[in-house]
Amino acid sequence: MVMTLLVAKAGQASAIIDSLKPGISSIFIYRLVQSYLPNNPELDLLVVARADDGGGDGLSLLVAEATEGAENLLPEQLLSEKYLSGEELCELGALLKVPIVNLCQPLQLEPVAIPKPWGQEIWYTGIEQRGLSRVTDGQHSVPLAWLIAVAPYHLMAGVGQMPNLLKILDPLPEPVYGDLYFELHEQKREVYVVTHIDRQAWHDGIGQIRYGFSAAIRDGFDRDDEFRIAYRKAVTSYRAVRRQMDALIDCFREEACVPLNEPVSAEWAKRWQQRLPADLLEQEHRLREEMNRFTHLKALRVGDVIKVPLLMPHALQHGVRTIEFQTPVYERKILSFDQKVLTQAEWDTDEAIELMSVYAPQEVELAIIDDNGPVKRELVADFADFEVQRVTLQPGAQWQLNKTLEHAVVIVVSGELGFGDVVLVNEQAAFIPAQRDDISVCNLAVGPSVLLVSQPHLHSCGC
Image (cartoon, rainbow, N blue to C red; front, top):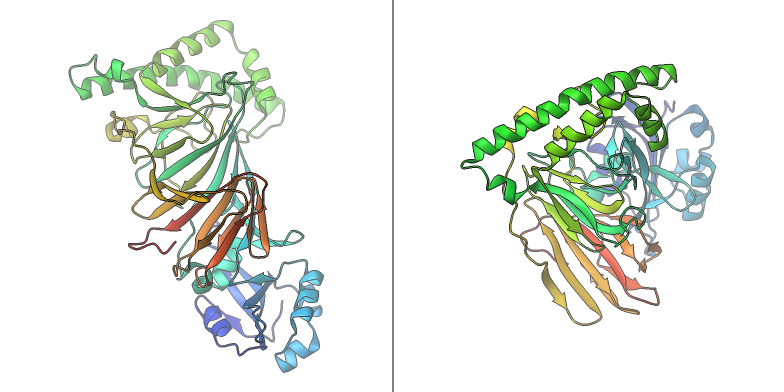
């Protein structure tokens, strides 16, 4: 632990960084309260910040865990003269195996994979106990959460804010095993953009999402409450047989020394299910079909956009890969699931059925913000708290992401795009700091490139 350095807490680090004169460096300890972990444990971070010396380098930042080993690597002149050249800062980063981050330039994101019973999520901006996304220079990386804590005003325009969660949903191609929870949200807003449909799962290239309820079934009831009662009865019947199956499969898990709430491969899940009594499997299939007949399956193609309204039950189906932007809150109510839910003991069926919307919203085409030939911009989602644009650039085209005093998160859907010194290709993403100048985005591919841009909702967007 570095004991001779100033210890800064929330909000103080930004003041230290802002006070730097050109060419001057500062070193201090930042005491991070890890609010994303149980009991909010503290972690001391070693921070070295350097203001550019007039050459346009911006504000460079090194953040590493403060350990005795890290202290021993610090140059003597940094401790005594408060000066470190850009080259020396890069050398220190290489020794500590952390990137040097420029707070005024796009930061390339390094995602983290989160296993799920239906496949995996790939988080680009995740800050949770389950996983921390990182910022990378291509060789070394550092948690995004650490950088936001140390420089909240430079990156997020304020303390206590969190970026929207950007992630990829990557379901297994197997029916049932790759189908997501049928769930709804009260606060979390989501928008999906379909990027790939597994041809082994969907031979015609048209996938599906379970999205709300069948209009034909719903219209067969005189009142909505009668529909809800009938649907609850179907889910309750299925839940009973699901409990029996899960209890038996838990025994198989214990035999194989697999934790009861750990995701497993589809092969293991199938192997255990095949050991279940045939009559139980037949009953499960019949009751699942009866339950699912109440719902609506919406067709999906690559490029489709799905905006999920609050209280709308939905479940992406197997083999449909999507990019998702969502409000950074963890809340959901599960109506049903075709496997064991690993993160909670019970479903939220009764409460969710009382809250759920039984009518799907009317579909509308995406609004075109601008289409000048080389660059086309569409408004993918315009929620109360954030918006998402899809930008299509023709070969050689450039587009300017204007300064808005708010951060942005971008991901390349297809092609190759340059953001200054950062070059991104398919499914690579970057965090755009709030305190920055305009950024020129250039299509480097031989064909069109497609980019998704998410920003906090502004009354007048400068992009």
